[in-house]
Structure formats: C-alpha cells, structure tokens
Length: 289
Length: 332
Image 1 (cartoon, each protein chain N blue to C red):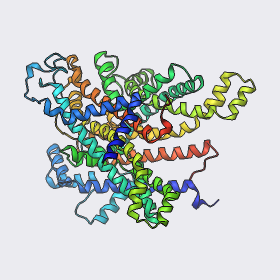
Image 2: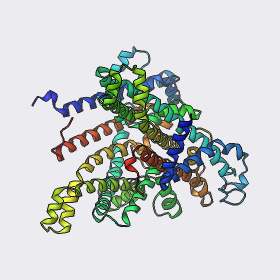
Image 3: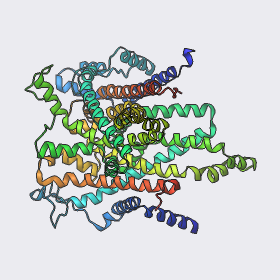
Image 4: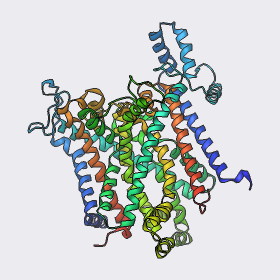
C-alpha cells in the first residue's frame, strides 16, 4: 500500500513538472470534482419561469438562463455527472473487452488468433459513429451507464490489437522465457510479468476511449437520438440548437456556448493529461530542463 | 505470380467479408427490434394513405423487403438477392426507393468532403513544410497549439460555432440547404456560385478541423526527410533553395500523407451525420441522422451499407496508393 502511494505521488510529480500536463491534471481533477461534489454543493432548481427566459449572464445567474428561465450554471454542474458516468463506463467496459480479447488472441495464437484479428478488422472498417448512433437510438437508452455500455461495444478493437501485438513481442523476450523455464504458472506470468508491460497502453487508452465516448455521446444527443436528462451537456446543445430556437436569440448565446466550452475544456484537459501520462511511461519523451 | 496469393486479392477478400458482415448486421438489426416493425409501418401507411390494414401490411412488407411469415433462411436469401439486384427497399418517411435518395444525396457529401480535404491538405502541407524547413519560427508553436486545440473540438462543435456566428449573427451565409430555391440546377454560373455559397460553412468546418493534423503530419514527415543524404547532396550541389524544398523535401515528404488522404475521406464521409445535420445540408449524413431519428429502417440499412462500402473503398485505395507510390512497401 505504501509503495502504491509513493508510486502515485512520484507519477504526479513527473506530470506536474510539465506545465501542459499539469494544466491537464488540474482540469481533470476540476471536472471530476464538478461531477461528484458539484451536485451536492450546488442545488438544481428546475422550476420553469418563462418571464426570465434567455437571460444573459448576470450576478444572479452567472451563465444566464435557458428557454424556461432556469439557471444554466446549475444545469452545467448537474449535467457533468452524466458526461462523467458515460465517459467512465465506456472506458471501463471498453478496456475490459480489449484486455480480455487482446490477451486471448495473443496467448492462444493459431486459428483463434486469426479469427479474432479478422473480427477486429471488420470492427475497425465499419464506420464507428453510425453504428453507435444506431445502437444508442434503437436500444432506447434511458441512463448514462447503459449508454456507456453501448458505446463500449465499438470502442475496444484498437486497444485489443495493440495488446495482442505487445504480448506477441513480449513472449519472445528473455524474461518471459526465463519465467517459463523456471516453471512459473501461466497466471503468474500473465499478471506479474505481462501486465506491468501493457499497463501504459491501458492507461492511455482509458483516456482516449473516454474522450471518444464524450464526443460520440454528445454528438448522438445533439442529433436528439438519446433523450437523457435535460441537464446533460449534449441535451443542452440539442435543445439550444434544434428545439428551442436559442441559437436565433442573441441574449441566449450563453445557453449554447456554456456546454460547448465545458466539453472543449474537458477534452483539452484530457489531451494534456494524456500527454503527461505518455511522458511518465516513456522517459525518452521528457523535455530536458 | 500466383494470382491466389497476390496481396490485393487477400485485401479484396477481406473487404467482401466485411461488406457481407455489414449486410448481415443490418439484416439482424431490423429483425431484433422490439415490437412488430411491419405492423408499425402498416399502421403508419394506413393513416397516411387511407388503405385497408391488409393492403398497408403488404406495402410495408415490400418497402422493408421483409416478410416475417416465411422461414428466416428464406428471408435472408431474399434480402441478399434484393440487395444484389440493387433493391435497398423503400423509405417510410420519404416514400421513394432508398437508392433514389442515395443517388440524390451522395454527390453533395462527396462534393463537400472532397473540397474540404483538398483545401485543408494543401494548407496543412504548406504549413508543415515551412515549419520543418525554417525550424525556429513563431509558426511552430502556433500551429502545434492550434492542432492540439482542434483535436479537442469535435467537428460538429466547430460547425455549430460557425453556424451561430457566420450564419445567424452576421448573416453572411445561409443557414440550411445546398442551393437556393430560386436558382435553376444545372451547369450555369449563378447555380454553381450558389452551391459554393451554401457549401462554404460545411467546408470551412471540416477544413478548420483537419488543417492542424495535416500540418503536424507533414512536419514530422518533412523533418525525417531533412535528415536524408539526398537533401545534403542537393544542398552541396548548390541547387536553388526553392527547388530543394519543392522537389526534394515536399515531394518526398508528401508520400506517406497521400495514403492518409484516402483514409481521411472514408472517415469524414462516415462521420458526416453531425456536420450535415447542423447545417441542414442534404447529403447522406443528413438523411442518415433523420433515418435513425424516425426509425426509418430501410433507409438506415441502405445508408449504413453505403457508408461501410465507402469506408472499405477508401481503405483499399489507401493500400493501393501506398504500394504504388513507394516501391519499398509491398502489400502484406
């Protein structure tokens, strides 16, 4: 336990030495706090008050009001939970699928390996966004975790292929051969010898799959295909663009821009943080300073 | 050379299998939907056309190319036979064959995607070459920052921003459609200018998104070419700088990017749903979005098949270009 903490603190130290990665880390922590603690601190008042509709930002409503006079900032905070749940569950399920399938292909070899590779080829060729949109709409999704599960169906092939080739190359290395000769069990070799070497791929892909899930889910909701809660950032964009005519009202600019900027900032933080993690695992990338 | 083992034959075989899988996927999709689709469609037709339920049911079966009363194997056979003879079913919303919708919509998508890819590619290659050649300029950090920001902004958000600022606020560009109703479609100057005017914002959205990645890819490629002996030799021979940059540097560095161009075309067409919906631009992406929203199964099937085929053709083209322009690379 102590070494784990030391590892984490050391890793954070490496990340914070790079300004961009540090910004990314701060951003990611900020959005996680927003999604977890935010809804507890900032109450959500969804009573419609059409007199106050489409107010520009002011002291009482720091990001203005929506088409029904409700505070946008509150909605943004509460909507972040949905986004985070979708991103997290997609990444989790996607990684799980990728690790299982990748390891299976890499370790079994032969016909099983060939079959899995062909399946991966098909998955990578068929255009991902339309499939996700079709699945998401036709399964009539009503909650963020199911949404994440559905998005994960098409999120694993790239990583699975990377894990498989990593395992194929690792199997030929001396330390694995040595472990085999020493008569260590397959599970020991898998978890103690192979796992540490594919952890970097998993971490970076966790971020990439999460990013893809945010873009895809927001896009699908912008199209109006999955009606989750109105505070979800993608739903806010859908309502502002296609349903309430907010894009034609100059004072409602904040209703459109707030979720947009939130999405962009979250994505940018993840990219910067991902860059830092890349450097952490690959010391050659570290800028000498 | 034995034809059987030609790498291209293998690639083609994989492509055929992928199309086959996509076809089977759409076949299963319609049959796995909760509720009786034929019934839902028949009710819809009955209300709109005032025919009896049995007539409407027969019409729905024909439109969907789907008869739930025959064995599944027969259904599958009929479905495949229909597709191979070009019968993609009839759209419920538009009441015309899906193939007609595709023929009308595909040119708009191809037009916008091609134009934006060419523009972003040219600008990106110019930027990338300049950065690699000049090394320490203000341009490098600017382009790198731009690329990482556009990486964070999905193309449909760029599209929304463009729509709100240049379409709604400034009223510089139209909000919807591919051409105005008062122009006469055909090869006349007013129509073509009008088409360009309507395509401007969608093209700009894709272009802004892609410039950064082309510039970074070109920079990386050109930087590695700069280390080659033939550049040093060209410099030693005292060739004009312009000639070295154009013929030796850019000419060689561009090769790996050409392959990405084909793949980018497939990706952009596959993801066109959002940008085209935002601009109400009547390409295949727009109809795809509408089809999913209204559960227009025949249209979903047809457009899904089309995007898959476009993607496969793009990948194949990339493979062929790759082996043609760079003799060192043989197709695996």
